[in-house]
Length: 301
Ligand code: CIZ
Image 1 (cartoon, rainbow, N blue to C red):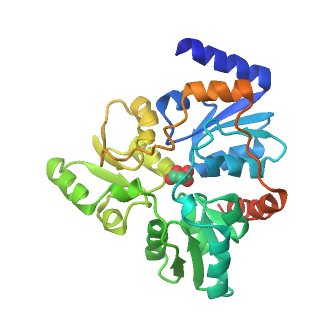
Image 2 (spheres, rainbow, N blue to C red):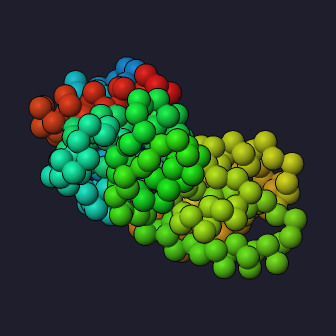
Image 3 (cartoon, rainbow, N blue to C red):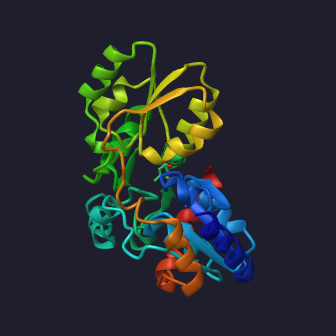
């Protein structure tokens, strides 16, 4: 592994490349990354960073977002089939149909969506800025796609808004049930329970804190609690194990492991740098419209 790390470092220098890793990536990928964070943070970095190549440890929609914001750079997704089943629940055609059904209502798309869906949307959001983004819009009615659970969470925070929701969900977060929280409360009465807003409403309601991956990491790092139970993908534990080794941090459900996020390994990063694979291309017209939705989000947050 140490040898592979050295070779990745060398290739990175030779190719003027930078490695991005989402908070859900394997520890071995986060360890070789130049930037680790959530989609919002990584999008901002992609828009400003100076390099020729971005190797994206993540899933397709994340690499597409980086390409849309940095069209002159080569963006590589090391595992071609690292996708997002939530993003795949909706197409651009579905968004056009929703707009026809609700004329005049602005469309907010969660960043977990294809470039085509972003291109049909007025503004994009991530789980860390969704409430800010939706509240920035004029009028009452807002179409929100594709995560129904995140949409429900936003709607509860913003009772003046009427959200039209798409019935998509992350099948990893949806595994957590309210009974998992009740069980943990019995076993660890002193613990704080923190969950992602992609969890179902019954889970969100019972949690002590709800936030995006970066917000969860910040919450744990600054919390006085010694025992913390986490309801999001296991990858967030990577940073916390080193930044807060004294705390007892557990996963709320053993199924909180995203198989798509776990496809990328150090070897895939190395192969990507060596063979220039797999290059992300986004149709120019689609990219231009999608960029508008993403930069509008960056302006709001
Ligand atoms: O916004 C992101 O990166 C996702 C998909 C989750 C999160 O909360 O960070």
